[in-house]
Image 1 (tube, rainbow, N blue to C red):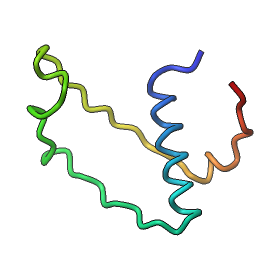
Image 2 (image 1 turned 135 degrees about the horizontal axis):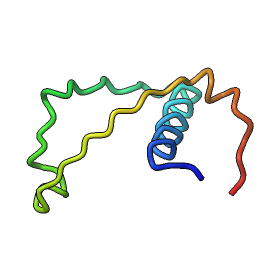
Image 3 (image 1 turned 135 degrees about the vertical axis):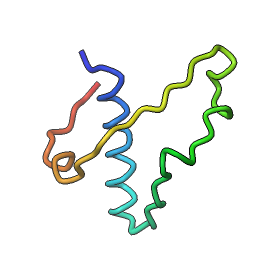
Image 4 (image 1 turned 60 degrees about the vertical axis):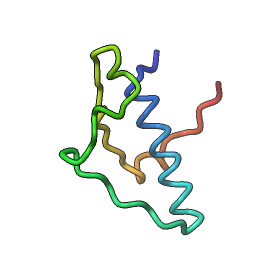
Length: 68
């Protein structure tokens, strides 16, 4: 079973690869110290999660297509 982090990684990799293929400008990354955790949806429940994932676009392109 694919876990949540893998789903997020796949979504980000797909977006990144698609933007590169379309020659769309890739936005600059935000530095974690500048993220305002008080603006996140879960703050009202006392929980803030900032997931950190890495992507490897070369590896993503080599993966076989997965059907659902």
